[in-house]
Image (tube, rainbow, N blue to C red):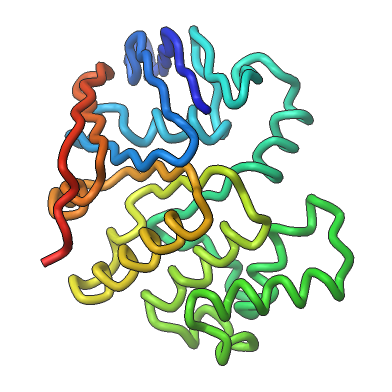
Length: 230
């Protein structure tokens, strides 16, 4: 379970201080699906970075299973991210010189998984997202939707507790967007993940049971009846 208390994040731009988050309080239960929306610059990606341990707040605490990600050492934080948190980005963030299988294997290297086991787990993860026949393809040989599937496999290969997605369909056409969302929602249910996603797409936001709207660093939570894809 996540518990965010009084999370504030300030950035300095020249002589100006920008408040990206202002005293955010938020609880995310195990297995929750939460979508974060808001205007550009409103703080939604900053909030996701706090939840993912990619950045630390200026004030407040970000607890995951009782461990405050804001105060632990960098080495321990890196370990928590490696073991518990899978992250998907809009731009895929694949290494262009590696194959699909090798890209997925990179998530297992920090965990000390041996090469043969890494290869087997990566192949299994790619098969689970429909790319079992694309193991040796480079990112440049894959479509945008296929590259995002590789990124999803990389996030899930280590069996994380938490799956975070920052605009995962932002670079995809409408049909591919729906395919990727159906895949993510299916994996969320199958694996019992805690799933938190940032999106600007209201049609996607309506599909989640909980919606967090951020404006000027402040959060409003809404419980909603999930709407199926059209």
